[in-house]
Image (spheres, chains in turn red, purple):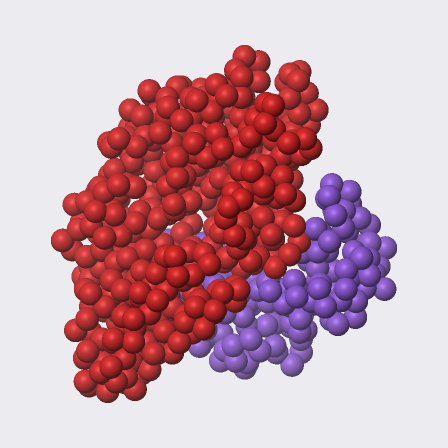
Length: 427
Length: 158
């Protein structure tokens, strides 16, 4: 089984130095690109590879790049590539692994991607508190400059690129790409209206592509080995491997690079070693806090962009959070809702007012103060905060685990109301 | 007044930015690193340097979780209380720390040494429960590990 993304990663050791990265084949894809491929050819190869964005939305990467005006359509002045390294989706830690473990892989992926859209400047938008990743990325960027992979006339080609690491001051909404752009401009991270899309008018009003870290890390391997090879890594129609992760009461919480389409069951039972003794699996969020619950009957579903939606959720970031049988599902959902209410940017009313309201109701139920009608108020909010009703995807994401909890764990909500308290606390 | 170090660092950010105000967040972080927190005077100093109004800059400063508009301790103990850490017992981690330090959530010890700050997901879910102190990640926390961590922090500045 091939693991192109994590082949160089040794969690207990320093990441590969520039020399070691080069020895493992690093920067060869970049050399091939800048010496012999036109930007449109790079985009075409990435399109053929079926690479889809790994930040959660799963948008086809090559297609995203192709929306950047090129040639005679291109506006004058700078254009930007941004690595979205604002990994703040609760339950998600995959990009940390990639950045700490093999920083040059991300840097090379960014240079190639920047070349494809002819970006003049690239930013790594790194979340707060990833201090080790920050240190290692800054060193990798400095090494890449020294070796002539960044700066003027990269590898003696006509292409030049500057790269900077921006460390955020911490806010979940920065992961939303247009909010991220506002933050990079030094503003409050409020999402922007679309259109115009960032590819046309993004950072400082210039053409901009924002791609997730894991997405960008795939790019050098696609260019080095080709689209057909990349597709062959996957068990499904969408190519590549995927960084999967599991947290919660399993025997071996962790991350694994596996073929795209590995089943939920294999990830939980084989790689994570199954549930800890005394704990049963009650449900799981497949791809971070903003995805709908899956339960026992869904375990044989392949973890990919098309199969998980068929059973009512999303693959999201691919890092699962387990709800075990000794944890109160109502309190679990309350924890998620408090997070989202706190992280609402405040720009649009339904999200700013709706999420704290929902959180207060769930808190009341959890503490034994709930009323029977509260459940219908919660259900109304799942509709009122659905996609299209709010300015961005934060609130719709927040109600995904709520709506599915009301479906799968309804009796738990009802018991809290009927028994005027939390059965788990009483136990 | 910005110190020479602060001004130089902010200016080096401005050099590759299309507008001075674009480095607002970097500038706030630079000054916070030097002073521990961002006072009203710091807002005015930075705003003047970036040709922004103080209100405009304060709007940015108050938006971000890691810009402190109140004084904090010399070591901010950031305890993750998002979902994976909560499942794995972050409530008891917070309780233990609150007892050891004698402060509540968001509180600072009277000697100005520690602030206990619950934070959103630290991206260390496979190592839950987790905390970050002075840029260092501590995972698989339990009572013994917390005591060891506090002991080391206290030893740094007796």
